[in-house]
Image (tube, rainbow, N blue to C red; front, side, top):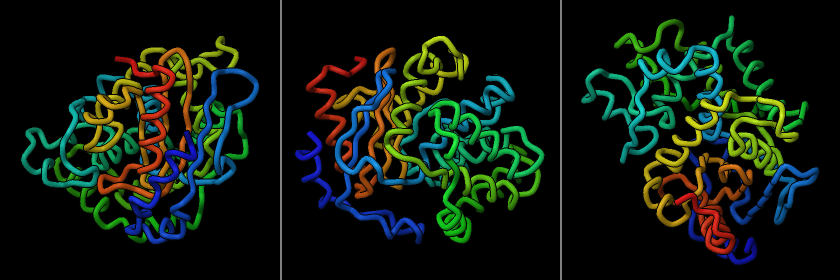
Length: 298
């Protein structure tokens, strides 16, 4: 299936609006599947490191809900899908109140990142890294300094979103501190193997590999899974739900996180993107997997 899906890598292009991401090899495609056993199934270029980018929004949302509770989080960010691009500002201007529609778009992710508790951007980042290391069992996971710096220097649109949200009292505090944290959050670096293990925890009600330790509360795991279904693949989420039917979240690095409820975690990396920011070959690979093994939740 990886060989079949890899043929589609030439139908897209790597993200170029973040300079450091332009260096990715567009022909790469990697897959890991984890079912809670000792080893992941892997295929393709599975040792390639890549940054989470928007996949980090799922994990940040989980941590913000743990920190602040559902009521506070969803008083500042909505629960509705949007047909707009992930970095759009237009809906913020017309929405009343002026809060983002959901946590999976950039404006919503900035709000969620603001809500994570921490005395400094570094403290917030370390707390998120602790959660990710616990989910993966990999204590070496950190962030890519080059990518984080590149994102911060090219973050003018996110800066505009953040100042708009501050003007309307959705967020408070220093915007540059928030952006320092947010760009590092997006630059957290791992492999498909790690990503599949994260997917497994989310898929299995927040439980760790031994299925006894609760890493994320059950209700939080269910909430983030639901957002993955309704909003996880940018403004292609509806079509993806019909064709694939797996809770998933993509990022513009080319990563895709999949969580098949009570069964599997899936990690995919393919940096060649379609016009909506999703991995072209990764989407095709998930479609083939879903059809072959009846993984759709619908």
